[in-house]
Length: 197
Image (tube, rainbow, N blue to C red; front, side):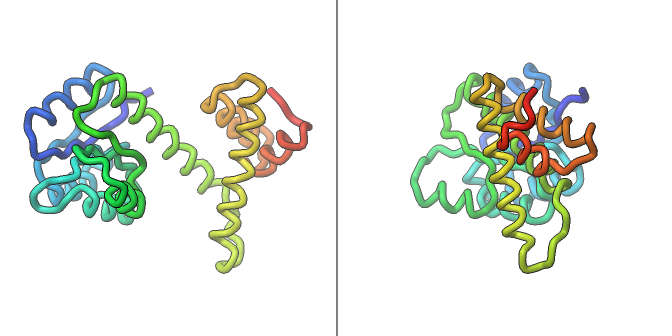
C-alpha cells in the first residue's frame, strides 16, 4: 500500500517539525508544509493529499476557514489542531467539515489513531458515495442518510459478533463488490440475519 500523503499547516515551526517527524516515523508522506492558512489551501489544491492537518490560529486564514474551503472544494479530510477546546469553536469546526480535532499539546499516541480514524471514515464516505444510486433530486440527501444508517446498523451487528469496525466495513464492501450488489443491499441482508462472515 502506498504511503498516505499529508499536508501540514501550523504557524509554530516547532509544532510543524514535531508533526512531520511523528508522521514520517509512522509511515506517512508529508508532501507539503505551511505556516499560513491561505497557503495550506493552495498546497491541498496542488498536491491533492489524503489528509490536511491544520492549526486553528494561523496568519492569512484561520484553520476553520481554511478547512471549510478545503472540504468544500477538494473534499480532503481535515484534522484540526487547537490549543482551545471551547464548545463554539468545536461546533464551527464541525460546520466547516472538519473530520476531527486534537487539543495541543498532543501525544503521538493520540495523533496517529486520530489520523487513522479520519482516513478510515473518509474511505467509508467515498465507498458509500460511490454506492449511491442517483435518486430524484428531492430524495438524494435523504436516501444517502438512510443508506448510511443501514450500513452503520449492519456494522454494529457484525461488531457484536466480534469483528472490529474496519473488518465489519470491509466485509460489507467486499461482499458487495464480489456479489455485484450495492452496499445497502448487503447491509440489509446482514441486519436480517441472512448474511454473516
